[in-house]
Image (cartoon, rainbow, N blue to C red; front, top):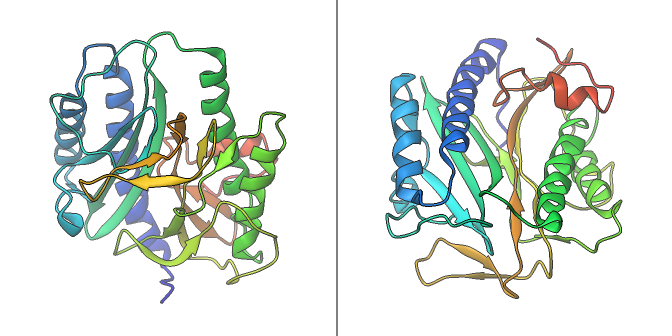
Length: 267
C-alpha cells in the first residue's frame, strides 16, 4: 500500500533526512586509504545517535551494521568489517538510513578513495547526475515512471555504454524504510501510480562501468557485478508537495541539484 504523508509527517522525515545527510558528510570526510569500513560504520552510528535518531539498517532483516559499505565491484549491501580497509584508487558506496520519531530518511553516496582513474570519476558523475534527473521529475501530477525514464535517459546520454542495474531500485519510504511503490531506474514515462502531494520516495540509481548483471555473495547481503566491473550508487529521499519536491536527505533540500533542471524546491 502506498502511504501518503501529511506536512507534519514530511517535516519529521526532513529531520531524519538531515541526520542522514550529516552522517554521510562525516563518513565522506573520513574516507581515506587505511580507513576500514568498520571505522566508517562507527562514525555513522555516532552521528545518528547524537541526532536523536536510530539507524534504519541495524537489525533490518538481520543486517548487522549501521550502514552498507560497498567497495569497487560491490554494488549494494556490503557489510562493514574491520578487515575491509580502503586503498588508494578504490571507490566506496555508502548507504545510510535513520529513523527519527518513527520516520525514515535514506540516502547514499559513492566516494573516490584518493586518486582514481578518469573513467571512475566519470562513472560517479554520471550516476549522481542521473539521480538528480530522476528527482527533477518527482512532480505532483506526473507518473512514477517519469522518474524512471529520466534516470535512464540521463545515463544513456553518454557515449560510454554504462550498465543500469535492473534487479534493484528505489522505493516508497515513510514509517517503514521500504514501502510501495518500487521505483525502477529505467522504463517508458507516463506509467505507474500518479505522483501526488505527500508521496515520499527513495530514488537510487546503481550504474556500472561494465555489464550490469549481478551476483549475491554467500553472506546473503553483498551484491556485486558479475563481470567484476566497478559500480556506483547514489540515493536521496524526496517528498512530493504541491509546491514542488523537497529532497529531505539533502542539506539544502535539493535546491542546487534541482536548479540544474530548472525545478524549484518547496522550502
